[in-house]
Image (tube, rainbow, N blue to C red):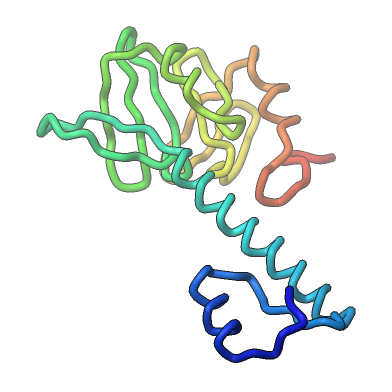
Length: 163
């Protein structure tokens, strides 16, 4: 914010990545516009940071660690002390129990059966005892049924099942 109309000062401030350049006396609409831009930029930056953080590295068959984003995970299947992470394009098996691996996940992941944790963002349909995620029909255990049916959808901001 400045009372100066000097072009050199204006060009200098551009180098410090300012949000906007306000000249006194400040006009109300200019101030509102600048504040809105700051808030929008902050949301974008925070959103990018969240996306970057919401991932896990999983070793593939070539002994390479692959970054797998939570949003790409459809479901995780337990096979005793092993877990299979199923994404849209690939499956990864790691030597870690489902219970242990699920501790690293966020609120969109819910256990729906003794052997399965699902990403609720990918639920297509729910019947009496099956949850459809992509081409996978996942059993819905009695113990977990109420938890699944009453979980709010993050994308739609409404209940998954009504009526």
